[in-house]
Image (tube, rainbow, N blue to C red; front, side, top):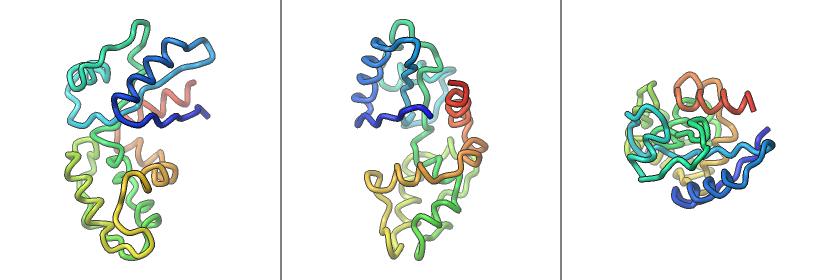
Length: 163
């Protein structure tokens, strides 16, 4: 399985990717994975990142070096509500989550407010916080459910399977 390196902020992630890409060899395939922050209308992730963040695709980078969590990582969580119920336990209110199945089109604010409201009364974990909960949930969600709900996640998982 590929090694995952959390890099901090968006700009730190991009800068770390550029460095990793520059130093990469045949044994290393760096991938930039960031939230899109908004709806993706551009034809490729690099086009979106250029429009959104003014980031340039490094020389020699391919389109499959960049991947987006649309509109944010939490959209993937909503694809597996059962996992969220198990993780947060008693007091979790799944009806507070956005009801849409097209998780990539749920606005970021709706996702974050839905998670906040769904977890507000949980007994053991309390209200969702990105720092404490995001990677723990990401490890537990069913990739097949996420794949079905998110074309961008499917694209990433297909790449990882072929590395």
